[in-house]
Amino acid sequence: MSKDVILLPTYNEKENIHFIIKEIFRIAPDIWVKIIDDNSPDGTAQIVKDILSSYPRLSLLERKVKTGLGDAYKAAMREVIKDKEVGSVITMDADGSHSPKYLQEMLKNLDKADLIIGSRYAGGGVENWEWWRKNLSKFGNLYARILSGLPVNDVTAGFMCIRRELLEKLNFESIHASGYSFLMEFKYNLIRVLGARVKEIPIIFLQRRGGKTKFSIHIFSEGLKVPWRLFFKRLKVKFSAKLC
Image 1 (cartoon, rainbow, N blue to C red):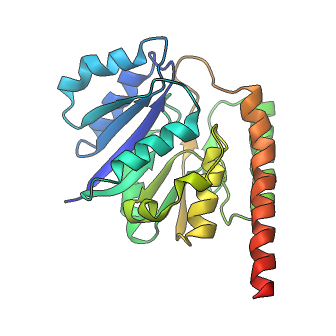
Image 2: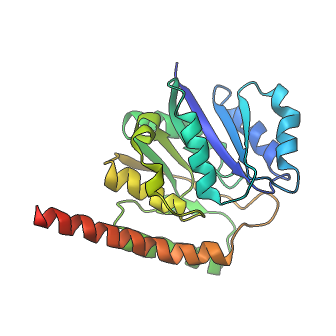
């Protein structure tokens, strides 16, 4: 029986981390969970250490420096895919916005696709967002989808399930985004470069359970730039194909 591994990146998530771990194992007791902590000053990693003995399928990867969501995911993925018993890798937020109740459906759909996306914009939705936040998210997705040319509704989704075999083929060095824009550049490389079969399943994106949002000027700025980088990458591929 293959392992399904959830990657949970954390930075100052002491209010949420134990809750989400308990919820995951309550709903999916056979799953494996790896916490990737970026040296959280609030003691998130210590909370995880304190409960490791209670959860045999829980592990912790501590990073000495906070360099962004993308780097955290890349470090964990490189480590996890070395284990040939791993069948799939799941990316998921640690703040409670991604409900573990969707995990079984994601895994069930892996026989139909290589990449499963928990989507807010393919029959799903968001819970208790202010109007400006909803509009900003919808515009951001439309902006990224048009420029990147990705055939998915939720380009910036962070709740995903990926076959390990696909990740083994991925050139991690070709993904340069360090913040949340990593999520769209990651999808681009899986779908456009590696030809992954993709399927979106609807989810309701929940309000952060506790703590503060990680949104910043850097995240916003990178979110504007990365879609253009993907756009020019598409043009380069098309131009090369015409020359051939």
